[in-house]
Amino acid sequence: MNQVDTEWMRQQCQKSGVAVMDTLDDSTIAVVNSCAVTSRAETDVARWVKKAVAKNKSVIVTGCLTKECAVRLKESFGVSSFLFGGARGKIAYAVRQVASGKSVELADDTDMKAPGISFMSGKTRGFLKIEEGCTHRCSYCIIPALRGRKIVSRPIDMVVDDVKTLLYNGYKEIVISGTDIGAYGKDLGYSLYELLRRLILIEGDFRIRISSIGVIDLNDNLISLMENEKICRHLHISLQSGSDKILSLMRRPYNTAFYGKKIEAVVNRVPDIAIGTDVIVGFPGEDEDEFKKTAGFVSDMPFVYLHPFSYSPRIGAESYCWQYEKSAQKRRIKVLKAIVKKKNLIYRRQFLGRQVKVLAENEKQGRTSYYFPVSLPHGLKRGFFYDVLIHNVDYDNTQADIV
Image (cartoon, rainbow, N blue to C red; front, side, top):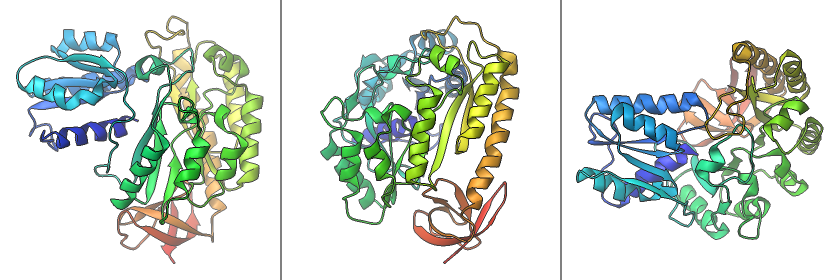
């Protein structure tokens, strides 16, 4: 999401005649696009602001910015220009105001009908945001408060046009993203399934990748689309915990039985699909017994990769003042990583001797529809598709030759 927003702001500035520099040293104004998912993310924001201020740059902070973080940045570094929420749409105006010596502090709703992005600087894949906002109220999360608690979708025809533009500019894989893309279209009277149906009808050799989707949004229609060659055989479906007790405390809208049945339905329909997930470790109430339930559930599920996160209390979240066991987080993350590392190797081994298509990311590496990277000995042309034959798989690498 932040990558898309950053590129969008870059292009809005360029369209408005604002020169965008490649390095901090060459700039006069630094725009820091923030993230507030964890306290570590906010620490990174402060680090970039400190670096910019040390180089005597004016600073504008935007993105998923909390009021508390803004206050700290004001007090610590003297930053006085902020764009909260959808006010990032006014980035060109804000840059001009700051350039003239004025401060800017704006808050606004997201406008999903504004022009989309036409390219992604330095990327082999085109990213497209189709939706903003989340109606869930997970007890640990403050993103709905920052991104919006109502769904705001980009109209289907505009998304189709955006995809065509990215394809015209040479991208062969389009990643669709959003705060809660499974809820796409609910505000406009249609669904993610209907959007994907339109996208796969576009002519050309390309593929669509779904960035992340909630398990409750996986219906039979969506699952059936995973068989289409233009939809990447890869889904990222957040779990967060394999303990029903912890899921309840998190206010997640499912239990492990529901999650497991949905994953089973996907795998039965598309046996070789790659499924990844997120897990929060050390959430309040997670003792060793509850963690063992998560580890066991992760072992039982056909995950091929996992993003583990240490629980981070966020001001404004329901769980902010709840007690949690921080000391065990690193060890538990290692346990989960070890489990999934073995599962990933088993998964990739099924492709030995198989021919697959990869999108070249550099001269010697491409990425499959199944999301795992493949190494090749020959020079590849970045951004192009190649048919390859996989001949070796180990823990650290998947090797292939061009067919």
